[in-house]
Amino acid sequence: MEAWLIILVSLSACFFIKLLFSLLFSSKKNESKGHLFPPGPPPLPIIGHLHLLPKSTIELRSLLSNLSQKYGPVLTLLVGSKPLVFITSYPIAHKALVKNSAIFANRPPVVPVSYVLSNKHKDIGGSPYGLTWRVLRRNLVSAALHPAGLKSYSFARKRSMETMINSFKQQSSKQEGKAGAVRLFEHLHQAAFSLFILMTYGDIGEDAIREVEHIQYTFLVSYAKFSVFANWPRLGKLVYRKRWQKYTEFLRRQYDILMPHIRARQKLKQEKKVGKEVVDLVTYTDTLLDLEISEGAGKLEEADVLSLSSEFINAGADTTATMFQWVMAYLVKYPRVQAKLFAEISQVVKQGAEEVKEEDLQRIPYLKAVILECLRIHPPNTSLVPHTNTEDMEISGYNIPKNTTVLIGTAIIGRDPTVWENPMEFRPERMMTSTSNDNGTGGEEVGDVTSFKMLPFGAGRRMCPGYKYGSLILEYFVANLVWNFEWKAVDDVDLSEKEEFLVVMKNPVRAQVIQRRVK
Ligand code: HEM
Ligand SMILES: *[C@@H]1O[C@H](CO)[C@@H](O)[C@H](O)[C@H]1NC(C)=O
Ligand SMILES: *[C@@H]1O[C@H](CO)[C@@H](O)[C@H](O)[C@H]1NC(C)=O
Ligand SMILES: *[C@@H]1O[C@H](CO)[C@@H](O)[C@H](O)[C@H]1NC(C)=O
Ligand SMILES: *[C@@H]1O[C@H](CO)[C@@H](O)[C@H](O)[C@H]1NC(C)=O
Ligand SMILES: *[C@@H]1O[C@H](CO)[C@@H](O)[C@H](O)[C@H]1NC(C)=O
Image 1: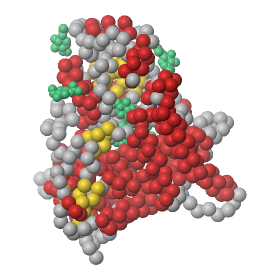
Image 2 (image 1 turned 90 degrees about the horizontal axis):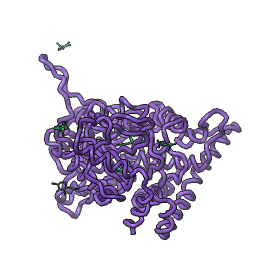
Image 3 (image 1 turned 90 degrees about the vertical axis):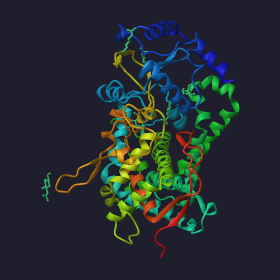
Image 4 (image 1 turned 120 degrees about the vertical axis):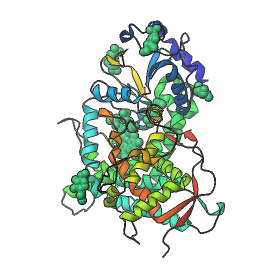
């Protein structure tokens, strides 16, 4: 069914012939490269490269790395008549994102993630480059993710972490073999979501947190199905009626679940105004309720606050939960790495201490290296959120006309054999630089993610605003899991990937959990 739908849409092609020609020629001669589109395989009439495009982004990644070997690191595929440009090399991607930052920071008119998630209401990730985006992003960075703001949530991080540790304690067993195996995913997922829900709506209680987590997760697993309505809104509604019903049903339930929490924050704020003593932390929702896009424009609509708060929960929790699972999978698979990490933590944390504190993290470089190495091999998505350019621009000698959708292949970039030796080998040590000197002082250091030739968080103006915070959470949670327990494989850890909303483990990791200090 999807095939004829696609063909029908493609029939409306108007630039097709022009592009077809430029593509056919650009793949053959390169004297006049500067005036041409990036190369690609020969397209078919009308459908372009639709016959080549796989459904999952994991297969797309494999296709692109094959095509890159033939056509180079900048290439074009036509979706009907619409060109999609892909970049698969770090220097080219970095240059486009950073040097051309101002004209390359736009988003295509419809970013499916954003459309499906927010039902056309405001969000940061999908907003075009402009005033609204700037104000919303500044609010996120200067309020919720500001160092001072982050400090006030440290209780939330500690609580989510302790809840997780306690749930593992209950499950930990000295029983050998598969019988004592625990599936990690649910616990890690809950910890990440609890934290971001607390930051968004305040302390709404364990049951309400689970309810919010559940509705947000429903979206994440249904995303692939729902995204058809972003690409073909009118036709999609006609063709996929049942799916449309499910989508509207999801939106209604999400509204019913999230809106009361937003109204509760609103009420709390008004009570404060009339002078009642309300001691509470400032949540992300509170900052949104106060926000005006421009002076005198009035406050955001309730539906916008809902969409933005939902974006915050998903953008923050789903990425960290996904990364969290990959990190733990590698630690279970490679006991050598886990043992080395534990040894480093032991040098920093006092014997018998209950917790690895956030202040301690700075002194555990190997922990940072482990997380960076996971981000390199398994960035949560195979590509960045699509970018588009507001002016014509040149990328690596090719001309990219304005409004072209450009996808940056983060996963290919992290596994580029010309940059990373044995890219599929998991070796956190490669992230470390030695600072020791002749007289024996110094040690090992690990730089910020931006000092490496990889782009798990993007770069430039659209770079993930949560990259420092995401890393902090991962470090804090992982350090405590390794400090409290030994994680032993019960079977061969399978690192195959599966596409959900992000790229997750096909077979979620299981492990035997052994408490290190039993009182
Ligand atoms: C390990 C964790 C994370 C990873 C790997 C990650 C990755 C990314 C990537 C690749 C992008 C797109 C960049 C681009 O298009 O150039 C992005 C955007 C974004 N991320 Fe993250 N992220 C993580 C955690 C977070 C956290 C904790 C938050 C905050 C609450 C967050 C909020 C956002 C937002 C709001 C955007 C949209 C930015 C814009 O379009 O201006 N992310 N993230
Ligand atoms: C095109 O450029 C590549 C290197 O950039 C070169 O190896 C190749 O010979 C060129 N092809 C033609 C037809 O000029
Ligand atoms: C890419 O090439 C490899 C090896 O030649 C092949 O196994 C794989 O199927 C190709 N992937 C795609 C999507 O064409
Ligand atoms: C993931 O990557 C695909 C392309 O590979 C892109 O279409 C999609 O928007 C990305 N999703 C997210 C959440 O970044
Ligand atoms: C580019 O996109 C913008 C906004 O979608 C539109 O107003 C403009 O006409 C487009 N320009 C071209 C050359 O297609
Ligand atoms: C060790 O050498 C470094 C420079 O290489 C110097 O800055 C430092 O003071 C020396 N430390 C001692 C204890 O000699």
